[in-house]
Image 1 (tube, rainbow, N blue to C red):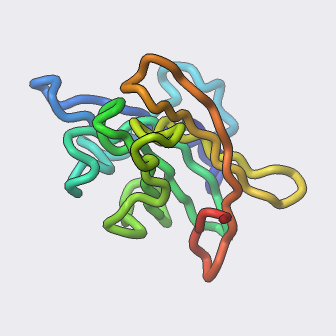
Image 2: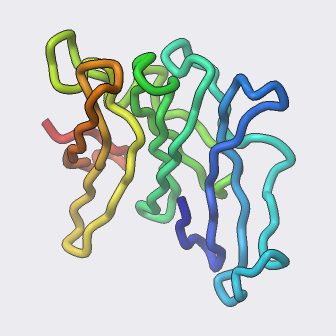
Length: 166
């Protein structure tokens, strides 16, 4: 995912450890006035900026999607590989390098058995609309990935934090 922030384009990406077991997130930046060619990019940390630490994240954090709200960065990310289940968490940052989870629980968990997203609510895409509304797009399925469904849910901002509209 790419987002403009403080004169830079921040690119968040998923990567894996050398053993290809644990997936995590890194970040690079390029000046917004650059040509975005290979020489314009700098990896901002020698290592991940967010790695799985919570039980529900298992061995995977992926699909980072970042939005700027009130001058701060918010990363919506998928925790857990597909259908483990995968669930959506959120972290915030003032600089794009140091991230703090907003909760030890998913912002958007998978559904209960029998619900359309029982196997996962994952692969988030956060979108701030021109009218000021914020939408979280995500995929889900009830059958361990035999089908894939896309949905969206409104995000409200309360005390500077995103909450799922119910």
